[in-house]
Image (cartoon, rainbow, N blue to C red; front, side, top):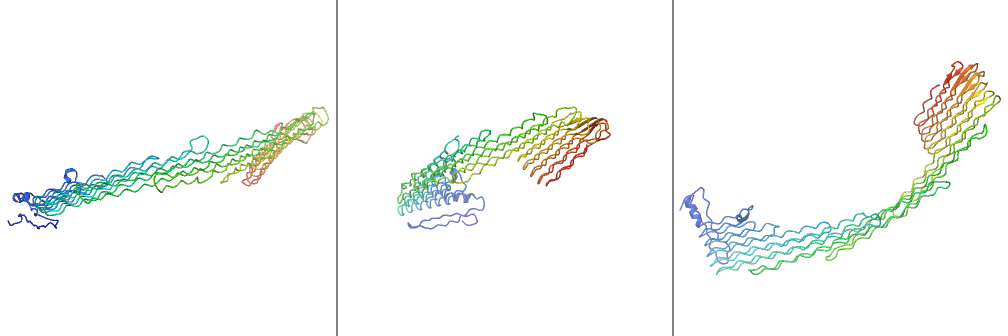
Length: 625
């Protein structure tokens, strides 16, 4: 036939030493029943598509008379040839599935070579174990496809496909780190690592295809190698040792303030967990059946041992107990006899010393290496010893006692009847010494120095209400000095009479301080003059505020008030006290001037006190009465 639709056939004669016979028909350019009929007898089978599924993965068959079979894909079989032609190659299995390769197609019934078997897929790798658990075994590799048979008269059998490699065993899971879940004692040991799993067996090789009268038998494929055993998991780390307890605090201060107790030593760190055992080796695949020349697959490699877990770190030493606060000083005794001064307040006691910190715990030992394989290492010892315990804080000094009040003057019809002055406040006790840090590789911190107490308040001056003679109220006592704050000055005593001289007591000065505020000045004593004739009747001035180094200066005291009724007397209210100074803080405000009551003529109000100076700002002056 001639023309565009006539099949164009090509052929090549083969001898037993040759391996290819090809028949090809040109594809028609359009629908032609004659061409389709010819292709039924003379044509090559179609190759399976690369993305095929199921039976579509088998290669197509050749024409009934002439034509080679198509190649399989994804484990599908190769197509068979007609009377004359080569069998199609079996498809290789999809990697990692462990499935078998496809068988090679049969050669031509009379003349033709068998198709090669497909390669089996490697087995699936095992899954790694969870914490401290063994891994899962790898699956076996797939078998190689069988080679196709050669033609009855002339043809060589197809070679068998190679077996797939067994999947690697899953590695053992690393042991979990231990947690410090105990109330006391050494840290817990870490969990042992899991064992590695066995590797999968290698797949069997495919058998070679049989030969015709003239030709050779196909070679058997190679057996797949066994999968490697999984590596063992490493042991978990040991838990950190628990911290030591805090030492007991000292008792309340009396005359002698006890010291704080020593801190308890920290506990040792826990040992590291043992390493996991190595996985068993995978077995090599057996020699392929149905052919010759198959070679046993190689055994897999032994998994490595897990490493031992790290030892836990030592616990920290306990902190030392706090020293007790010093006792407060006692109040001064009140005056007894007329005109007696109040006694000074007692000084505060020294605070107790802080207790020493506890010793640090030792680091834990490393875990042992796993057994059953090679390469495992013992775990390292704990990295550090615990931190030394901190020293306890020292006790604060006691507050100074308050000064006693001055005695009141005894009323008389004539003569001077002075009232007693208030006693000065006691000085505050100093703070105790801090405790030292405990022993250990890393230094702890010393305790905090105790803070000094507050100064005692000054006592109030005695009152005087005589009807004749010179009448004077007692002066207020000065406030005691203290690190945490100065004591307040006592108030001046009041005076009342109808005499030539009536004088109120002056307010006491506030106590000084270093870190706290200065004490406030006391209020000046008021005067009351009825039907008097004197020209020099004066209320007491307010006491000055106490100075401070870092705090605020004390507020000045208010001047005493003045009451006048009848007579020719002249009266004066007291001036306000000056505010205390401060080196780095704010100066204290000045005290307010004393106010007048009763008749306003010849009755004079007091002036306000000046504000104190300060590094951070001056105090405000007091208001006039």
